[in-house]
Picture 1 (tube, one colour):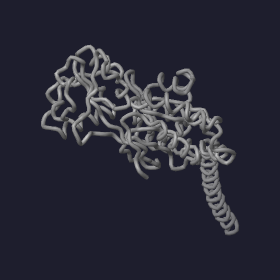
Picture 2 (cartoon, helix red, strand yellow; picture 1 turned 45 degrees about the vertical axis):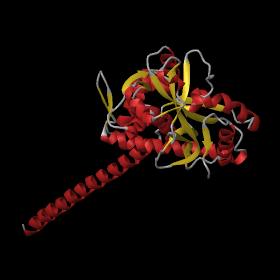
Picture 3 (spheres, rainbow, N blue to C red; picture 1 turned 45 degrees about the horizontal axis):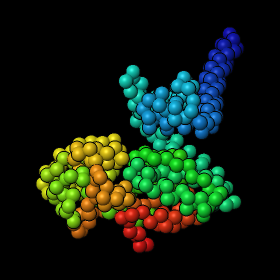
Length: 350
């Protein structure tokens, strides 16, 4: 009887040991499963492609699947499926969708910022290889703001063609903020902008100062004046570029310094459009010197007037990524910019 009890107790104790062993086994399996899940997640992250990253960066910038797809040269369904797949792999929502808009989430902002850095570093591989071989060989992706490009590029392109025949220019005209974004995402190599500009990771180098001019209709009361005071702009209908253009901001700053209140503003889509509106007698405008100094003094429709000293100016410079390795290409570009000798400009001493 006692033996049977002992056997029974032994069985009980053994059963408890087996139960504990079973629990430990299940815990170990769970841990192994979690570790394998972590490894799988690592594998998932590892297979995210640079193309995927380009898609989410473009969508964050454009806030439209259609426009982002156009920028990436793919169909909208292709981009939409890729973004959704990436969200599933990351396990987070990157974008909030609505019929009217696409908005990036806080998690999406962090991931897109990292994606931009990854794309930039990936692009450096080809940049470094090209720079080692020949910094003046291979295309240079150059951005120029709208209020500089039409007058600078006809002089700049032939000069660079002579001095760096193996370095064709891939050109883009755009607004300052968009050119800066494209520098950061390595879609551009160098941009020519109006300064000042301060952005982390970008190098800024001033090149020249450009004077402002007043453009008036040939029959305007100021047409016979030698110079014009900046303060008098406040008394006239003033044609200006639309909001978001840095040259508009510079002209408004000039008016603010000249007196209280603001000018009577009429908007035009481009400097050339504004020039034609002035010629038709709608109002007057302020222009960069390079855009108007070539107008003949006896032009039948327009008169170019200098400001009374001190002449207002804007500073123009080059901007590129601090990591951009083709320093010789930047130097050649700077010398060519100075040798363009645009009217109304003065080199900045370095």
